[in-house]
Image (cartoon, rainbow, N blue to C red; front, side):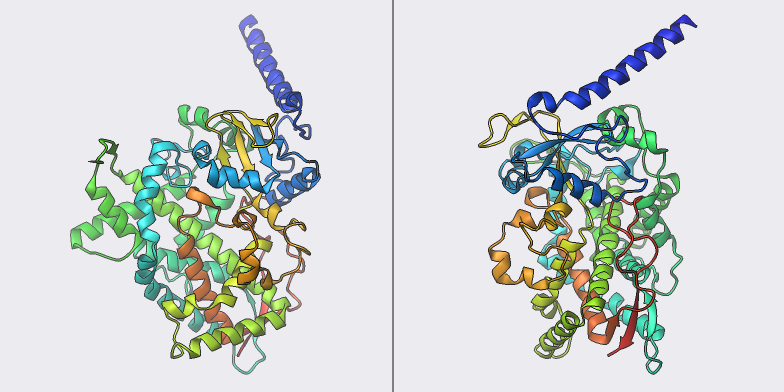
Length: 506
């Protein structure tokens, strides 16, 4: 009994010390920080009643005029900094990347193999995986996958024509789920070589499992916060974060696909095939004597897993928000449709790899959508050594501290984008882009650790939107929510309920 009393006292003292330490750490160094909550830190309302984007934007706006290159920040229990200065963000992402190469996120490749994907990996293993995966997303590989995406997009248009009658003045459609079904079919085909047919049978396991990853938790709020805040300790304690049904679905699918392809000697131009080849290659030695470890089945599954998640969610959301804005701005929609048709006339009326790349105004619409509706609100890095901010000798980011770059907040900063809530694709004309620093637009990150699948995501988004705008006119209706309501349970930008618009055949 006495032992338990002493244990409770010891634990209480430790918790009190950690709370006090987190509260005073940055203030003792002359760096401003809002007093952190004992549990939420500076993320009060996280996954409860506040959207992550709003939390970061409000914190950024409070301190951005204070003259500090960074301010103190606590992401739950994790002691961190929030980057205020664009030049410092550029140093972290590009110039001084070697000191900020890691993300420091939870991954447990032994007990929870699907967490061991490129986005989470750090150090030598990240570098090796990045080098191996980068060739998958070259322009040449995109050309190989292009006909597959076109085939799915043609089925997409057929489904739309069935849903939108020719003579009844159009139809009210829910675009969020429809776009997700399109991108799920694209990714399922390009990653697994499997025709999911989600466009016609929405209730597929692919669609259900993809949705669960962004909203369902394996553990309660406290254990999940612990894993986020202390990833290395959580790894040592053999914690897992991926829900069992999601783990079993993707691991089973990968094993079955590999076994079938090897048995039938099937070769495809898809992401899975490249990973299978890497697995077969095994470990090898570079010219400098460094040994590169081969892929095991868990690592292979993890890369397919993240390719599926990143590919379907970000692209489908971008398409949904673009159509939502175009429905409210008929002049921009008309200009885009005219541009798409003009480019197609120059390419024999066909959607080809070259014609899609030539649709520069479509790119402007997509870029402006990603600015106003930034899917992933922040970039995360970890200082590998103490870092003195150039020009600010008293501002030091200590070794091991997590660095957050509030991308979504930058995108709505009126000093960077005047009248930031206005949807204006002209912000991304060639002239304006040339006069803007690259780190002022960060939907795909920047530097050596930017999104490796950016080309693929852009390609399927361009194809999907080009097919829709070419064939249909979109407008607001009585069911259109203005403004949209966002889901606080999701890390990425997702709405509560659907996004409804009216669609008419052109």
